[in-house]
Length: 232
Image 1 (tube, rainbow, N blue to C red):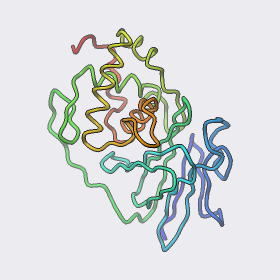
Image 2: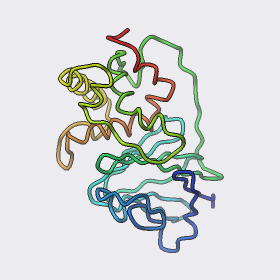
Image 3: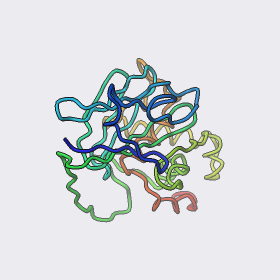
């Protein structure tokens, strides 16, 4: 079987050392944080039938799981599991105001990324939609703490008021553009950005950051957008 290692904040963990599954949460083999919003045991890594599995054993929080290039992205809600099959997998989740990232490294992975370069254009396109500069600024300002950190770890998602102030916008303008961005991504199937059974629309900022960072919709190279004014 391929060897799986997990990295968080520069520290490495070996799930194979845990006989009954490797738990991630406030407690467990990988004790992330004493954050009261985080489950005691949230994610569990197990090895079954020659495959490594990531299971959400919590009851409220979901995780965003993505290959290193951002081409394959899944939303892992409570009670579900998915296989870890890429050489590098990013696992991003939010508890309260804090977002965390854990990286999984798998040797002899059964799947590998095949990348192709997209031609440069004036707008950022994902799927069949594009974002204006101001919409991209909104995504970047929410993800800024994660984009500025080094390696994996944790970061704080700014409030709508703080993010609007950072851009020099009125909060009403920020919220209107946040509605537009979430609606665009919801139309192409990104889950967790709209209200519904078991979902809170108030959590959409966290979900947007998770998706944008994990899928590489925004990267540290986009940070200069925060210095532009009015779709410059």
